[in-house]
Image (spheres, rainbow, N blue to C red):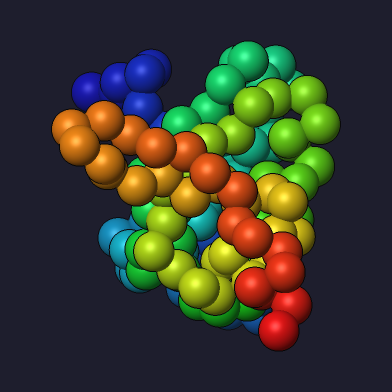
Length: 118
């Protein structure tokens, strides 16, 4: 029985008859494939919200993800929450807004460049 709403990922190793599929991939690799699929689709939504997209990703994958964020952000608003210094290091200080909870409300602010440059 076939399900037309399902996509099956299957790869063949070059030079062998051995196949592998998504079950053989790490959680981080699957997450990266999903994020890449989202960010490289031809008709992007006007806004993309992501919660900790860096989870499970290799540091090199974070560089690729940040690059895709920069490219996509020219036409789509991207809001991503992160606790990853590695991901944040891929952006300029002007690209980062810090949100703190103060007296039961959210306070948005940009980082102080004079403190950051010391």
